[in-house]
Amino acid sequence: MKMHKTIFEALNGASSFLEENGREGNAARLLLQHILQTNYSGLMMKMHEPFAVQHHQQFDAYLQEHIKGRPIQYITGIEEFYGRTFNVDESVLIPRPETEELIVGTIERIQKLFGEKKELKFADIGTGSGAIAITMKKECPNLDVTATDISEAALEKAKKNAEQLHAQITFKQGDLTTPIANEKWDIVLSNPPYIAFDEMKDMSDVVVAHEPHSALFAEENGLLLYRKLAENLPAIMNTPALIGLEIGYTQGEAVAGFFKKSFPNADVTIVKDINKKDRIIFCEISE
Image 1 (tube, helix red, strand yellow):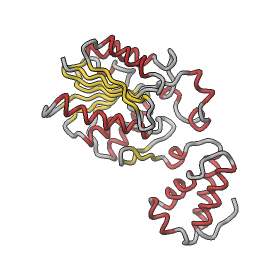
Image 2: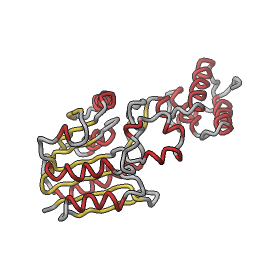
Image 3: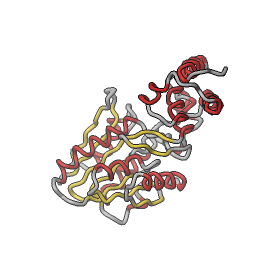
Image 4: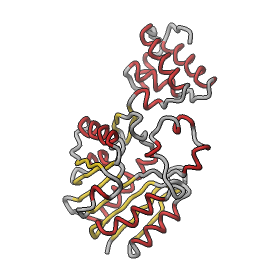
C-alpha cells in the first residue's frame, strides 16, 4: 500500500485494499483502532491527524496477514465478549456474539430454577478462551465455577483471561465430563465442537485455516459430543439443575431428542438466536 498523510486517508485506502482482495473493508478500522490503541469514537476524532510512518508499516503488515486469511482477532490478540476483552490466539475458538445469548438465557433461568440459593456449582465444558465461565462468574458471583478443556493450550489462555478479568475459577483438563465426574453440579454449560466434517468445504478459509479444528468439528454429523453429554450428565446433575448448550442451526431437534431421552421429566427447549435460527438447547431439571 502507498503511504498516506492522514489517518483518514490510510483508513479509506486500507478498506478499499481489503475489499479488492475479497475481505471485509470494516476490518481495516478494527486493525487501525488496535494500532492506535483507541476505540471507535477515539478513531473518529483522530481522522485528520498525521499517520505516523511506524504505524503505517505495522498497519500494512496487519493488512497483508488478513488478506492471507488470518482472522482479525488473532492478529490483534483480542476479542470483545459480553462487554469484556478476552485474549485469543490460534489455540482457542474466537468467541461469537451468538454465545452471549447463551449467557443471557442462563442468567434468566437461574433465578427461576434456584431462587435465592446462595452458592451454585457451575461447570463450563470445553471452555476455550474461558469466555462462558469467566462471564458467568462475573455476572453471577455466587457461582462456584469450574472450567474444563481437553486442550492444555486452551486452558492456559483461559487461565490468563481469568487472571486479567479477576475471576476466581477452577480449571481442569480432560474430555467432556471426565474431569468433573466425581461431583454433582447445579448448572452445566457447553459450546462444544458441532460442525460436521463434510461442511468444511462450504466454510470461510479464514475459519478453516486458522481456528482450531478440535473446537469446530465433530463426528456423527457434528452430533457426537451432544450425544455423549446427554448420556453422561444424568449421573452428575443435582435436582433442580440447568443444562445449556450452543448448537448448530440444523441440530435443534436432534440434540433436544438426546436430552429428552436422558432427562424424560425435564423441560427441554430449543431457543432461536437473534437471526431466528435454532442456536441453544436448555434442559431444565426441576424434579
